[in-house]
Amino acid sequence: GQNIDQPTEMTATEGAIVQINCTYQTSGFNGLFWYQQHAGEAPTFLSYNVLDGLEEKGRFSSFLSRSKGYSYLLLKELQMKDSASYLCAVRGARPGAGSYQLTFGKGTKLSVIP
Amino acid sequence: DAEITQSPRHKITETGRQVTLACHQTWNHNNMFWYRQDLGHGLRLIHYSYGVQDTNKGEVSDGYSVSRSNTEDLPLTLESAASSQTSVYFCASRHRVDTGELFFGEGSRLTVL
Image 1: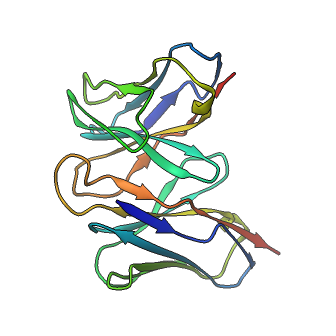
Image 2: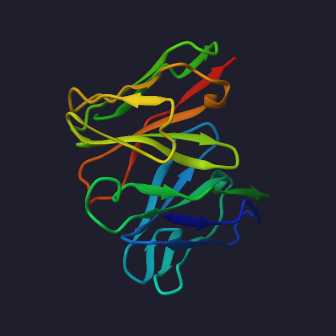
Image 3: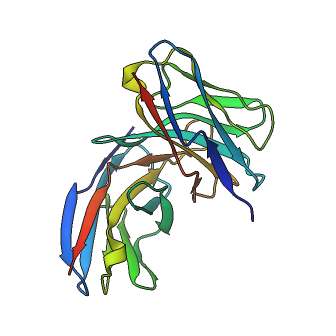
């Protein structure tokens, strides 16, 4: 099975940098995803890591260490519109029924303050 | 534009009633999923399908069923609604098993009284 941990809430200041951590324990691993979810809306895809290292996409970057079971999402130059929940999700490893769906963490609610 | 839509967006029902939530996608995706989202639990997988006539149970499937008669639709049925099934339900789809990005519908908020 999968166990995914991330902080429940974080607060950061507009213009600053914030790092949201995610740790996971899993019986198999084939990728880690970050989704953004604004209140009352659907989750939307932010990033995907399957190999160790940093993936950068504009103001957002995501890092993965498979040996440590650890990922983080880095948000730079925070804007008020970045206030949302950030969901970490792990994909299972083996093909076949039940193994390629995503398991989600409980999400981190980020509040950006002026 | 291709999209994924859910209906109804909001529903109130009574304990014991049968409820069906519709999900329709126009991307021709093979894989479709139903999740529920509750405070303190995050998104939990209810059922999923990898293609027509294929359905599989997820983590929290008790009390729910799905059917996949065509590529576009995966309706979720609550056979006898219970108050514990009050939740926000999200349908999602993706093109292939080995590509990860899920595309989510807008969600259906269900209240069981």
